[in-house]
Length: 269
Image 1 (cartoon, rainbow, N blue to C red):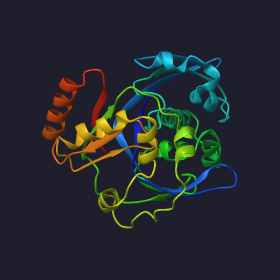
Image 2: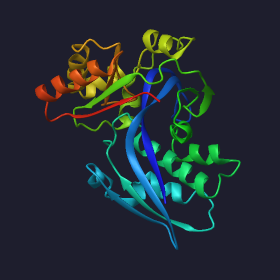
Image 3: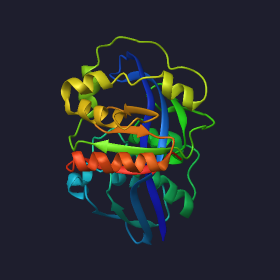
Image 4: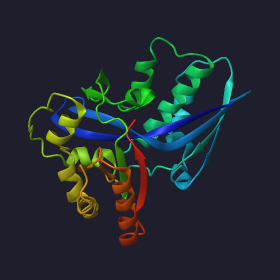
């Protein structure tokens, strides 16, 4: 049996540079990963099966739209896998939940059989975030997010709080609402500097489509974090703290004020 965590992805910075002729966008982003997320449990089987449980299991009612089912078809294997997916991350939330699930599946296949030499290309066909989610380590993404550069992580272990107002924000809608203005490249330096000096260019269009995201950012900023920002295309927002006790106090106060919001606590990997 193999057990893998599908680590929640956050974008410490996300600079959108231009629209491409193929409909995608050129971007520069700093990927980071939280030490919590969905869970995949896999056992060898005669044929591939997928059983989904957890708080957000019902959001994946169409198996053809499930990226794990798609991932099952892109990796050659001598035997099937029976997979149980515990879906703890909200869908369409800016956390790369589906991509993280696919990344965890790739690690399961690597554990059992190894990965083919072209696994990065196979991962990219599933989604732009999937190659980064396979290793789930802080890195820089360029192009559509699939051109990855390793970077030493000076934020490893930093406490993080994720908050989502339980609204789904389809990525395509947010990119479509981006105003097309290139506001400049992502800063260079260690992750701590990039995060502080960078920005998320999708935050403004996301706030237009889902103003409640502004309430999440306001609530997080009121807890005096080291940094608070929306992740990806939203609607999840994150806050980084210098102490776990400060994060835990923030989580408690936000839960008391907004008991209907989803949240998850962890630390950066």
